[in-house]
Length: 169
Image 1 (spheres, rainbow, N blue to C red):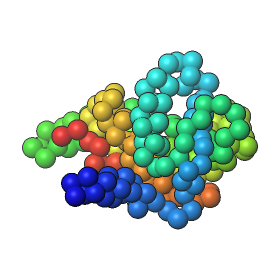
Image 2: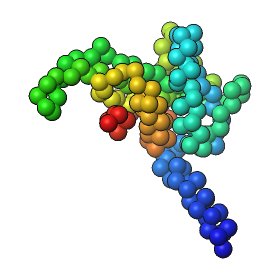
Image 3: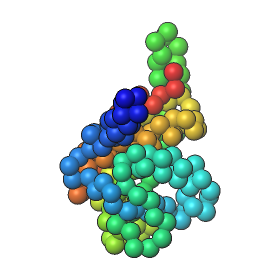
Image 4: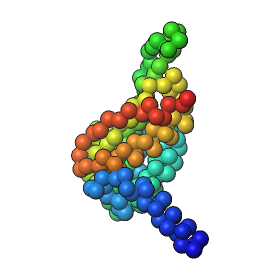
């Protein structure tokens, strides 16, 4: 009986990620991660690829680092120079607006015309933070953008999402 319960629980928990997906999301398809040359050369890909892979594994897609894949996943980050913002206690704090965009496109489409990534469908998550260099916030933003990508997936477009749930408390 305990074994049957354990199997049922595993099936239910394993399907939770799939339950929050668009019916159009290509679950079960293969993908590759496409970085820009500057992400690759600078070593920033070492920070971007592991959380992106973890997040995509939860979607039911299969990573394939070789040719002949169905989709290309992309991740882009951005941060402004920041600005002074009034805090709750009346003081001021320097806040950066940081964003992470995760995209998904058919692999046979050129999504980097003129060196700029332009995925067919992407989710941009925006976070206002006092520290633009927090790796834990970056990982959370990548995971949130990927989950939202699966949930809101359509063939083309860009969706913007509030990333305040990733702010370190």
